[in-house]
Length: 398
Ligand SMILES: C[S@@+](CC[C@H](N)C(=O)[O-])C[C@H]1O[C@@H](n2cnc3c(N)ncnc32)[C@H](O)[C@@H]1O
Image 1 (tube, rainbow, N blue to C red):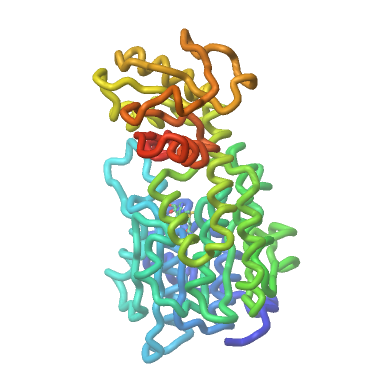
Image 2 (tube, rainbow, N blue to C red; image 1 turned 180 degrees about the horizontal axis):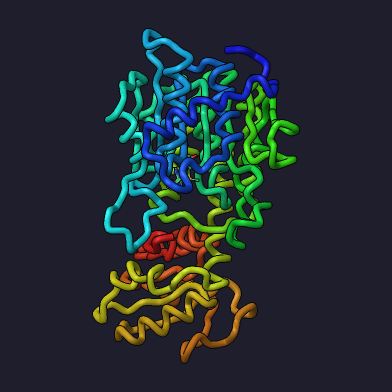
């Protein structure tokens, strides 16, 4: 691949977008890039001549079609070029509830493939995150375009995964690095700086096409060409996970990344795990999550035949005491590590300092803490031995 990421006005490639859109029944709002941003992306593809491209975040698939058009116009069939497109949602995320026709993610690329001779080998991987499709993607990707959530943790989570998929000196294009400044977007977009955070934290040769975008002084698209330091400096990406998150991914996704980092980034995995707990605890504290949904799985495990004790005396314990009482599940005790730090009662139950003398192996203890669930579980097991300990983290959707 060419080594310079310097992109000039004459490198911008505007034509593929118009040709591709004509083949895909132009849909309002798609692609989700401006003409300039598409031209920058196509210009980079034309300049670097990648053989394996990964696209993360597909939406209608208009940008996929534009990438395919660029390749078909500038390259040869014999090069066996491949594109992998990944999207978490199988259904087009901009479908409206009132829409009669539920469009699939990538539907515009399908229109293009059905109506013209597309020889580029394109795989669409839907319904999974990048780390869940890791094994389905070739591992010598030389060009990536990432355009997904924009809210933290969003794109940050995928950068360590990308680094295990790409070849040396791969080019990574980041879309929506300025979305947080768009006055036309809903207020929530002010928090849409995950792409910029990922761009800043990943080490490499960077290009922001300042001076080329006819509208934005600091454009909304940028690129990095990886260097040998990119993987060495991966700690910065994990440190960036410590910013406050705007959402907490569901348990399935949490676990998928945890397993991935555990396998490939053992040294940094705990930073992710801690960030997850801190942000979950905050979301619970601020009631940004629905307690009924979060704790329904745990509560469904408990019956009136069991007597349970709770370890924790905060808002989660308060909620569980109310719910368990409604379900007529007997509560024995409320434990904490140091009772002086807490109110003396949760409901009608006194808060007591935990001691192994107060429990037997037949008791069930629910750990009502998000941040310290692991430590408390280990502590109880160490003190009492083989006792049933249910942690809210294991059962909640978070
Ligand atoms: C801004 S749109 C992509 C626009 C597209 N690149 C274009 O230029 O038209 C974001 C897409 O990312 C998808 N998405 C959201 N979270 C994701 C994740 N964690 N991994 C992969 N895709 C995700 C959404 O379903 C949505 O289709």
